Image (cartoon, rainbow, N blue to C red; front, side, top):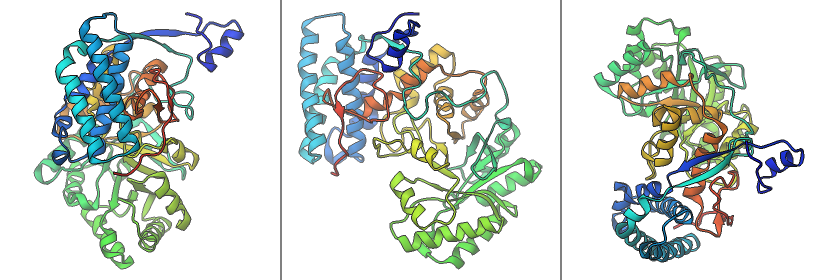
Length: 464
């Protein structure tokens, strides 16, 4: 145990009370992470504006590379001529990123890409060898203000099928489910049968996935009792028809395809910009809930602003929000200074995370991130298990979506370990490395400055 200075207000109180704070020293792979972000195939495709499919995804990757690189140099023990050149090129990249933040246009984009490519193509060997040992305060929570400690998730063993979360209406839902996006035909049937066979009891699908009938056959052939399963599906194409009769008819078709007389969780798959269509769709789902044909209702791919629009016309609020979740985008694509997890918690909405280990739709791959790999090595688990466990300890339930059976098996071993406050801080802080613009602009506000990036809170992102 070490006494920690007054830089942390949490620890300052302990120091004044003459109680020691625990500051844990940990190696952080800044250099490796910087090179990894700059060298991904997605980032290289965006070396030129015309070939870039996601401009803001590219800028996020360059911010991640830049912030990691500047921390690597800050802790560098060598002072060679090459290090001096790296600092000069890094300053140029920082200026370009700041300019894009203020004026997101094609010229600013090309300046960032050019500066970044010069820096990392010429000096990646210098950066690769620069890592750092930093101190992280174990008593400092998990790096986000709205959740002072990790959720109470089992860590001494247990089967995934026996772990549940209770929704605001009292319905119990499995913490870990099996997603079926992009699974079709015989492959879908065999994968779902196998998933049920190893203990998965929550299955997630959608109208637009086109596999509900195959799921129904797999469920029937598995021979499980209906009450043993939790089935979630979605109304996907309502905006094309905007007719209550259509929604009702399609819901009945979904029931028939899945071989059931009720749905455990029924969701709107995406928001609508048309308030009238939204009201009609949500009122239909509310009616199905009131009639007992669905046990819980929710929405998917919604932002806080879109939830507010829904609340204005809703009689019954959603119990579930199912969104993309990663360490760089914990619950929403466009990061704001108020976390969507905090917003959902305030409104008693449980968040379900999908694509936890997937880079989509951006460029940073969490499964290959040196920061994540370092945590996995310390806790003796796979990167995928670390990411899933991180999400669970953030208070959200998760979906695994993989036809690779080894990946699905990894989810069965999420409850025999836990991530310490230190590990949670390091993982929650990654979003600051991908969001902060440079030394002067820090974000998002809801995260602690774990990596000591400094700077003022960032302004909202401008449009390209």
